[in-house]
Every structure is written in structure tokens, then in C-alpha cells.
Length: 295
Image 1 (cartoon, rainbow, N blue to C red):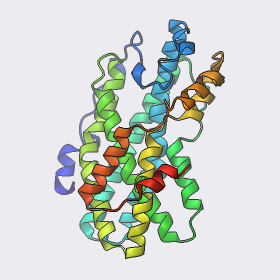
Image 2: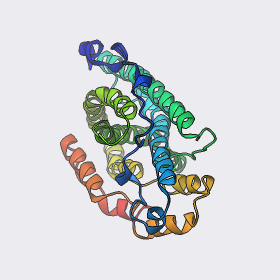
Image 3: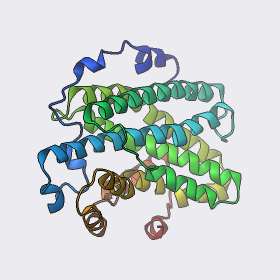
Image 4: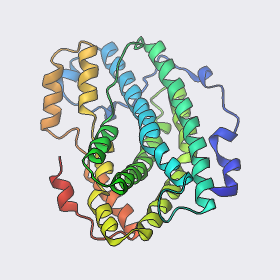
């Protein structure tokens, strides 16, 4: 990032008048991203209810981004700024992460505003969304650790993985012509910064890994793929809660079928992405078989 940040950061540019881009007649989300899109119970719902579920999908995606930025990514930025992570204590690293932290604050503003507008526009002001999977699982794994450095490295690898995964979803949504322009442009503004963040966080992970003791590197090998999988799983409990709140009939049956059919499981592509990421960083001997056995 460095000196080029001021030229390219979304927060430094002129923001388009987003609310003029609202197209209420268009859906808010891409239907193929719904985990139950092919289930007969969903298919039997009327058009208005399916549209409302698409709006819920948009809210789930965006409010997950807010949780991830606040609870996973921002703490990693803070750790670098205060010189907490080995291999990432230079002034250049600290300044780059401070710039990233400014970006993330702007992303949170964008997403929070988008969610407010969607809730008001679609009559979903009272919808409650539970904690997202990747945040919950990161906290649980950290709580199981005895050493502070283990908790720090879990935070780091979760932050790196979520930045990589967020970028893919932003690319998909910002180019989805079937959803309303307000949503496309909101995600495009967020995406504007993510390419540089992918490089920044990848470099951070490599620099920290290189500076670790052998036992700490072995710990990275054990945990590296987990947050990729957690982020990419289909938020079964959030969707179950949403379906109940909306009064969707046979909601549990539909969600249980989705779980049984692995419709909410992380795809092989995500595991491949994690492998490619590890290879690019020169982190070998990842314990893939242990990952497959973890809950």
C-alpha cells in the first residue's frame, strides 16, 4: 500500500450518491448463493417470500462482513500497529496496517448504511442475526489455547483468510447485473481496496511465519486452513434463525436437508484456494488430514 494508498483508497475518493441507485423492483442478492435454492420447500414459496429471503441473504452477507472486520481483521491491524507480531514490526508495516484500518472503518460505514437501507426498504428492521460462523469458531479455538501466542496466531490466520475470502464474494456481487445497482456499487466500492489488502495480508502472513520459532510454525500448519473453511460454510444456524423469524413453514426440515446434503459445507474450491495460498507463502506440510477431522 504505502504512498500509493491515498491515490487508490475508496475512502479518499468521491463517493457516488448511492441512494439514487436504489432499484426496489430488483432483488438484493444472487439467488444461486442461497444454500436452499434448489430445495422444493423454497421452490414452493411465493415470489414475495423468495424476494424477502434474497434480501435476508444480502443482510447476512453484509452483517457478516461487519462482524469479521470488527472482530477478526481490525484486531490483526492493531497487533501490527503496536508491534505485537514477530516479523511485522517495521515502521512501513505499521503504517500500511494503519492505512488498512482506515479502509476497514470506511467499509464498515458502507456496509452498515447498506444494511439500514435494505432493512427499511424491505420491512426487515426487526430481523436479528446471530454471530457469524467464522467469528464464533475463531473465538472457540482461541479459548481452547493455553498460550497467548497461539491466540495471536489464530487471530492472524483468521484475519488473513477472511480478507482473501471476502475479496471473492465482492467480485461476484459487484458484477451481478441481476441485483439492484445500489448493492452492486456498494460492493464495488468495498472491492476497490481489497486487491491491495489481499497482497498486504498475504505478505504479513509470510513475514510472520518466517520469523516464528519451529514450534510456532508447526502450529500455523495445523490451523491455517480452518478459517477458510469456517468463512465459506453456509451459516446454517443464521439461516435457521432467519427462517423461523420470517415464519417460513417447514424451515427446520429444509435446513436439516441442506446440512445432510452438505449444501452448506465449504466447497473443494475453498480448500484448493487455501492450498494455493499456503504454497504461495512457502508454508509446506499443512496437516490437511487433521483439518478434515476437526468439527
